[in-house]
Image (cartoon, rainbow, N blue to C red; front, side):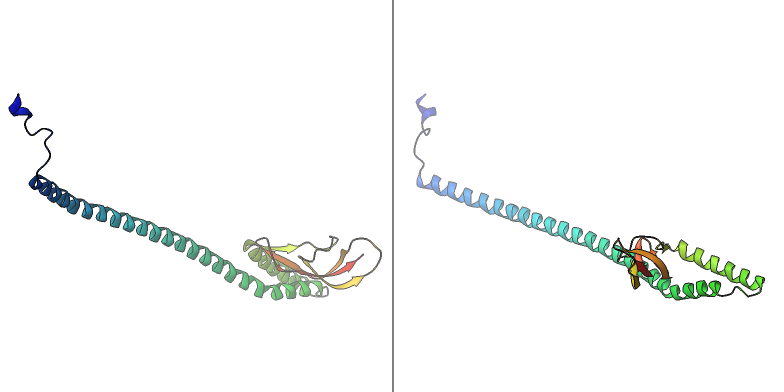
Length: 176
């Protein structure tokens, strides 16, 4: 039993300590590159995720901007056609003595024109008899008839909304 117990519990020799230190050094040399590679990999993954998120945000922003640009282009066209619509209304109001076929032709063209604009999202602002709203009405005349709330008593030029947003306020006469 004495031979087997020999060496157990003995203090390590300087050669043993040197061998242990060399082994630990080799182990550290092998572990350090793995840890560095894992850290580098994690940094690259984080960077890739950030770039992917930035690209997704960029794509969404460009899509929104393009949508707004298309809507604005349509809005500009419809807005430029409003004076033509006004002239049609003025013509219809003043051709009472015209030949019936001419009047009917103008009415049909006007109706088609209004239908096309309505399909584009144009809506007339119904102002007559409504309470004055500075967001939808532009008061150019005022008649002080009392102390009540201001009410639209006459529409001098029609106002319009395009897709729910005021494109041109109605030009009105306001009475109290």
